Length: 144
Ligand code: SF4
Image (cartoon, rainbow, N blue to C red; front, top):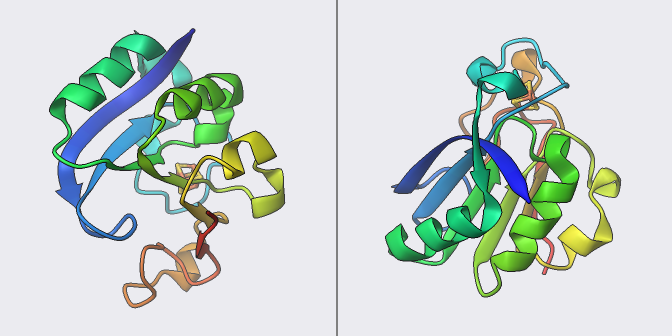
């Protein structure tokens, strides 16, 4: 199966979950939060289509740790591909960043990830104090 990505930032983030993490930005978002800083990820047609197996091989060969944050865009916009990707990232410490609520995340994903950030970005609640979130309404939690 293929998945549409925006970009990958290797071993470079301290703000998207515990530790030094690789950020995988998936393409496509239909939530469109006002003030979103990743608007270039909204249009699925503007992403890069890759085979999930090739993506997993590249991540395994280039990441210096097993800590990965899957963000976007809205990862659940490509739900089927996301499930396959997460299943193939066995042994990884996965954080999933979604603008949806916890109950909207399928159990087959929740049982495989370590951390979940949920809730839309709300500009008037923007925070630089609450760890690992962009606005104070959002929740970052350990799920596994
Ligand atoms: S869900 Fe994320 S990518 Fe989508 S609009 Fe909101 S902040 Fe931006």
